[in-house]
Length: 121
Length: 107
View 1 (cartoon, chains in turn cyan, red):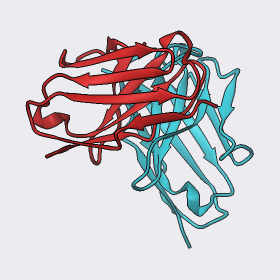
View 2 (spheres, each protein chain N blue to C red; view 1 turned 30 degrees about the vertical axis):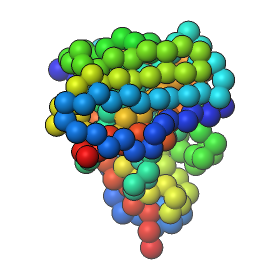
View 3 (tube, rainbow over the protein chains, first blue to last red; view 1 turned 60 degrees about the vertical axis):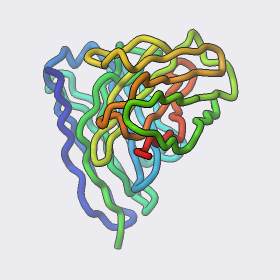
């Protein structure tokens, strides 16, 4: 059974940093692309970051470019998101997602339960 | 970037009725790389349909997808109580956006 377990969500002040982790199990982690999708309160879905199976290529949306960094450790089957210079508009539930294949084009066939990041003073 | 328009914004129907949800893209979706997701309140989204018309594992056959190019449709043939949720489309070939969602609510 595929499982994606996010952790690291918290209340943080504007300008602060946070690192999210996603522990994956039930599939060969190193064979699939992974992504992060977020959802602000009452809003829709935003796919803002992704990484290929080997980690050699990453994507960051303009909304987070230069502030967030996606990475992975295939030896630990874990996906990470380093979030710096956090803003109020980054407040959202952050979902870890599994790509259907290693590289684009892929859809997200499994989602974690989400972790809440709140940016507020 | 592809702009997606899902319609209607809200669909009010009764259990047993047929639901037809539309997803229109501002430019052609490459190779029908379009997915549909379902999200219930307080839950993560779940994959329903990929490649425009292929059902994901475990998805009941009352859910069907169709379309190509710029116009796609998700149909729920007979609504069950557990189907009342928000549905998102996503063209995953040449875009990383999601539609804004269609809420299917109980009438």
